Image 1: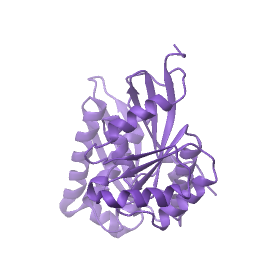
Image 2 (image 1 turned 90 degrees about the vertical axis):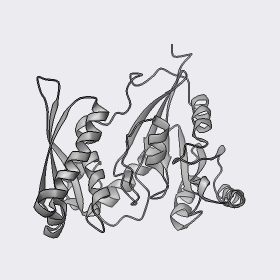
Image 3 (image 1 turned 180 degrees about the horizontal axis):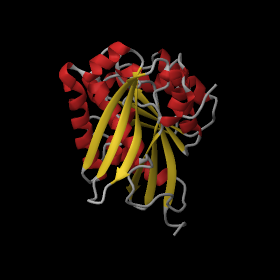
Length: 299
């Protein structure tokens, strides 16, 4: 079987808000990664498992690469670069509207020193004039040798099939690493916490989402086939706790309800989701908290 099948890793790397999670979800045909209009929503590597003909494509969505300040930030950036280093092919995703800005420049320069296989993927090409795409491509490829260039729109799906077909043919021959019907290697416990965190991003504003994290405290299979999941949301400040809970508990109920529906759909079983909000200042500098949300320790 190994000589007729292909299997390999493709890492999605880029600046915050380049559209990596949207592209991962589009390619996988399922919601695997948090998507929100706010930058830096993905905090750790998410693996999407995709069958394309006789090829198993293992898509790694990495956190956006930016200048880190907190321990949490440093762990996120470390996870992004590890994702790129472990991959057979690195997909450099660039927002065609933002172009070759400072954040993209830094990533291009670092990739240029790694001698890895890089494919350039210009995203959001439906939102810019075609005349702007060639100069942008030229500016990037002058500084970074790339094997292929793709123009896509993760939002509409334009150009994504071609990218997948090319990937399927370019990954190395070998046996599949995961069962063919798996969608992700993300544990259900972590998925539950991420979907709660996504709703915090969608339903709160300003600094609240960045000052909050969610952890699954317990995940219990019930005899009727349903599952009970208890998730604790840690916030950095008392004011954030009040905002999250909302008037008469209205917001936290809404966060739980929407996350529960998405989780039930992804796990294909009834889910009973219970949320608890705790104030814990400095959680983003705690090693235990970072490990709990799937990030490796960093100095």
